[in-house]
Length: 275
Image 1 (tube, rainbow, N blue to C red):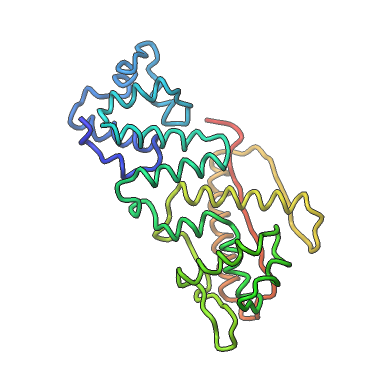
Image 2: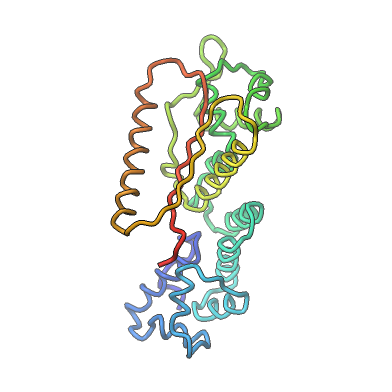
């Protein structure tokens, strides 16, 4: 029964459930979303499965019922349980712990992400240091970086970060003995794992919070806007945000003057009302 789709292709249980149902209904036309509700013992609630796909919390009792319906073996069941815990984790520490569990349970964790890439996106200061190397002349002594970086990072973590950048081929010493980035910029690229990027973005949002509550030593732009608009206007705003991101990348890539600062830019656009 569990051969319809490979559970290890997923890190999000809702996406797995959605694609599993689509794959199985092709072989079993009776396996509809309504039938899933019946199999879960929810004959009077036809919308439960659809609600789960949209984000409804799943209780441990229902997790067990899903495992039975999906026909998962012991290892697959444990993996499914961990995916659910990861999705429903209440804080960043738990999310990281469950992501580590998921990697440990996956038969081929390299399929999810490269371990070094996981390290890179798992700590915000790795990307910050990558940019700092371009703006500062940094030798093996990381004390000057530790003195200036915001928020503060321990000297030990900065040394580990530099080792990681070197191992990933993202930094090397120039002829003057200073560590410099080997690329102009980095994107998630082949490591574009949704959960990995989400954890990284959560850390970036926390940086914005720290910048907001800490008396600035340099001008900072902090702006929010809450508004009502039509769905058409929302789509235009989405397009405008993407255009701005492209323009920002172009300005950065075409900047021919020596970098003398490192900056963080976060853009958030999300609904306050569910459809």
